[in-house]
Length: 286
Image 1: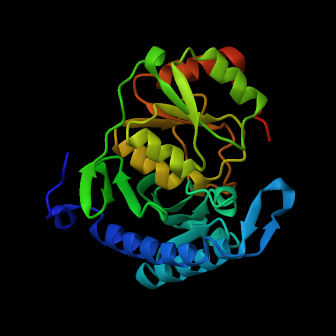
Image 2: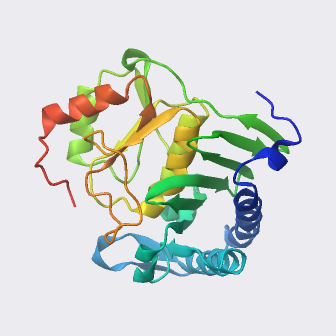
């Protein structure tokens, strides 16, 4: 469904959307200038994955620009030192400058920019930008979600496919034993691979997939804050593996009980299947 040209003037997060979209476009230019070039890659401590010099440069740009435009808000970025003063704020920007760094390193197009806004410990607004496709998605749980490509804005809507027709989108690099066990238990139709959290959320909102999940506790708030707002705004469901809402701006940034993103028809089926595998006291894979 196409959206009218006066959309921006009526959007409740008008300022946040305008600035976040502008920031994402400029950050995308930094990324694409270096997409096919050589850049430094190092491994984060404690098996937290790779980081490139481009991740850091993009993070510095996003953080500094947000600070200029929203000086009283807190900001938490994957590539910056965590500032504990954010815990006293009710508005926190949650940033993943390159979601899917390994995809970027591999010159795969399946990486995204995440800019999310947390208000009172909840995902309130999110924007995902695909630098390669030059496609932007944004949304809020209360006011719907949208996609813009080639200047055309369309409303997003998750599918209503039941479990026997469901299509799952899987991670190439984070397939744990528990994830495979849960996937086998869910009698879905088919599955495919797609890199990055934001990429999977995009597939869900475009109706190309019905669910994805992570059974480990390594997923952080910056991975999920922007995608959650968009998926829920598109009519999807987002919880931990036990079916409880995700809480944000915590002292520990991990989602310690995993995450599920899905359409509303099959969400309870996934949580019920998880409970048949592990009980509430189970501590998830690290």
